[in-house]
Structures are given as structure tokens and as C-alpha cells.
Picture (cartoon, rainbow, N blue to C red):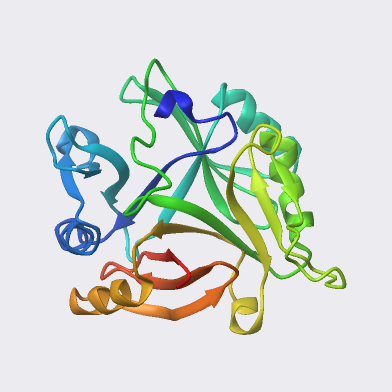
Length: 262
């Protein structure tokens, strides 16, 4: 599937954690993921898979030891990591980790956009890494950005850098001065995320990307997360066509879950 991911689109997600064993067990219980630890040579980077840890397993995400609290990170597909990082700086972004080859199968850089939200740029080498399970149950399916302002203004940086299409969906209020922005790569083929105007307590948060995983039932997933030692940060609520919630893993990394509305 990695070779089918359009340029500019999300290609991978991974989480840092202060407790690799604990969080890996949490996600196994919550989503049924299995794990493949690449060992000390790669800092115990662990690939999370759907369908088992053998050849039948499909890559869905990664997790790696890091400082507390853990955090989920999102990376976008680029053809030339060095060139994209240099362009990001010209557009007002900042390089957090310079482009470097990793494991012989990709080039990777970590950046921050003009609002301070971090994201990765990933250039596969050969078949390279990337989602093998995506936009399906128990896999990453949506990426949401919060911004205390006009969403389209925050997304202009990404549109210029990655060629995104940024559009206002038809369900928004035409009188809204801060309308939702829907995001897609390669001229609008397949939405992968959106940017919404921050409201209430969310206005105290720095702009950031939230990784959201598809589930069959958001309420049941939240109940299970608590049983497994996680925390429900935002209880399930209804948005157009979906029921969504936010959960924090025991190691501190927050993520969203989404299910089709009943």
C-alpha cells in the first residue's frame, strides 16, 4: 500500500512512550494489534500490525521508547525529503530533526509548521515503509488539526508545501467566519483529514495534529480503554456523520477514535 499513497498524503504514524511494554500491551488490548520489536540497534522501534506478527501482519503504526508524556506523530509522503524540508523553512516552518536516512529504507525529517505543530516528512527508498493497513477499522483513518483562527489560513502552509486541496465542506454554515477546512492530496482525490476552529478549552492548546483510528463503536472503545489503564480525555460526541472521542494511553500519548454515527 505504501507505493499507492499519493505524494503529500499521510504515510505513517508512530508514538513515543516512556513505557514500551505497557503501551504496546494497551494497544494490543484496545485494537488487537501485534508487535514486532526491531531491537536495540534501532532503539527498540516497534512496528504495530493488524492480523498477526508474521508475514500476514499489516503495518498500521509504530511505537518507540521516549520521554514522558508519550506523543503520537504524523508523517507525510514526499519525493525528496531534503528539498521539502528546505521549502518548509522558506514557507515559515522550522526543521526540528534534519533529513537523514533511516534503516536504509527511508529518509525522514521532523519539522514544525509556522504555528509550532510538529509533523514528519518521509521519503521511502524502494518499497520503503508506510501504511499497509489504513482507513479501515482499527487503523489510522483521519487526521485532525485544531487552530484558534480561520482553519484555511493555518492550512495554507501545507497546501504550498505538499500540494493539498483545502476546501470548505458543503455541510458548513455559510455564515461561519471560521469554517471547517477539509484536506486532500493530489488535487482533491480522497480526503484524509481536516482543520477545525478551536473552541472552549481547546483554545488553550497549541495547534497540533491528532491521529484518529477507526473503530466499530466509540463508546465501547472508550470503556475498554479505561479498563486497560487508559484515560478518556473527551467522551464520545456526535459530529456530522460520526461519533468521536479522545483517549490517552497509559504512557501519555493522546489519540482519537471515530465510528460511523448510529
